[in-house]
Amino acid sequence: MYRGIECKIYPNKAQQLKIEQTFGCTRFVWNEMLNMINQRYQNNNELKMLSYPKLSALLPALKLEYPWLKDIDSVAIQCAVKTLSETFDRFFKGYSRYPKFKSKKITRQSYLSTIRGNNIRFNDNQRYIKLPKLGWVKCKSSVQHIENSRIKSVTVTRKSTGYYYISLLVESDNQALPKTGKSVGIDLGLTHLAITSDGKKYASQRLHLKYKKQLHYWEKRVARRRLNAIKNGMPLKDAKNYQKAKRQVARIHEKIVNTRKDYIHKITTDLVERYDLIVLEDLKTSNLMKNHKLSRSIASQSWRIFRTFIEYKCVMYSKTSMTVNPYKSSQYCSSCGFDSGKKTLDVRCWICSECSTEHDRDINASKNILNFGLEQALVK
Ligand SMILES: [Zn+2]
Image (cartoon, rainbow, N blue to C red; front, side, top):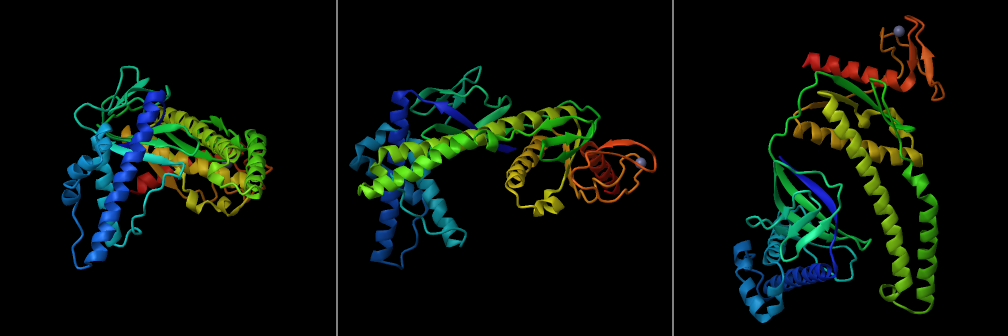
């Protein structure tokens, strides 16, 4: 089973230079090759497209002409050619657009390198990762541990925030967790991100509120500095203050995304460890999705991430996940099945008129989701 792991890295000055140099060299090779392919086609459009081995065979000559290409990870250069060749394949099949030249001006830059022997590996406590031509690079401590897994490739990226990340493609063996014999239904909500049928409630983080002021502060500056630069006839790429404000905005967004993912990782790992069967509501059929409010749309992003994490972790740790249609999950009594009709959103607690059970609205819904799931599992 393959999965991707993303992790922030903290390269030192020399390593940063090397990474930037690699962005430049792989971009150069991509552009040179693309230019050559374009020229060749213009000269004779009857010629067949060069295959990857043929493109790759041109590299030694290119390195002879531009010796500085030898200073960086040669696999990364190989990968740039391979990716270009694959992009052409997809273009000829009609899956993607014609390959474009890569620009230095784009703030997001990246390169790919595949494993050779043991050249990409973590140290014992996973605080450092060894990368080709860079040596040991410090990485974020909260990276998921990857025992019993093999790294296949690494993509080094500089995001618009100016921070560096790696994303690893990792192949793992079956990592079955011990069975607990327990099942759970989960209701995804607004005030609480997740409510389990066992009565546990995981609070929502409300990050958009937490960072609203900060975001507004820098967004205002981006707009103002942009106008100033234009007024002074300065190209935006040279407007240092404008670029700085833009980077700040990107950093706040990145912070929100990372914090949210960390939080959802914690919850979903906890759930997959504690239960064998996890039943979620199918978000597509949720009638609440018709609501276009901002808080709802932000919550729905978290729900989608939540579901993706549950699904892949269940596969990875040999547990079962399923989704059910949540239709009337807040109307039925989870004890006796009596349909007590629609309730407005302000009704948080109610007592079943049939069996007098006292219900918390959300916990009752998650119990119903579990019941729907167990029924569905029986039918199969
Ligand atoms: Zn009842």
